[in-house]
Image 1: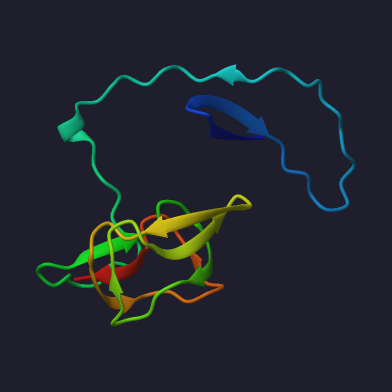
Image 2 (image 1 turned 90 degrees about the horizontal axis):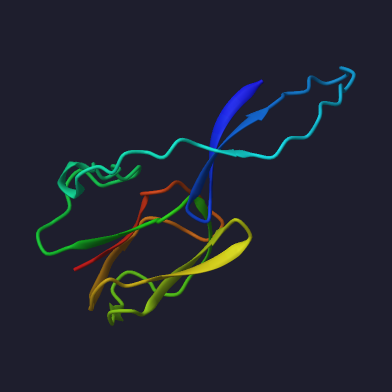
Length: 133
């Protein structure tokens, strides 16, 4: 049995999952309702560390903003190319995650300096997708 923490609509649940080996007989176990995990103590906002981007460039130039993946998924399409002028809120690319298409928008107006992904590429949470200067 392996234990996992699952978050559903802001609620955390601790679940146990049994791994079934190939060719092994399946034993049925009674199904039980999930039990909520113990609430986590609230941390001070300043103490909460931010995850480091997985594919961050060595150093972002001054004045450049990076657009990062908010969750793991697959890039379905890219609506801009390097050198394009973009406005704040303009859709840069579409990220498919959990069978949902998510529009990733420009955090500010500027020029697309670089794109670090291509359609069909799998990305992790925090991966740098584009730079806007």
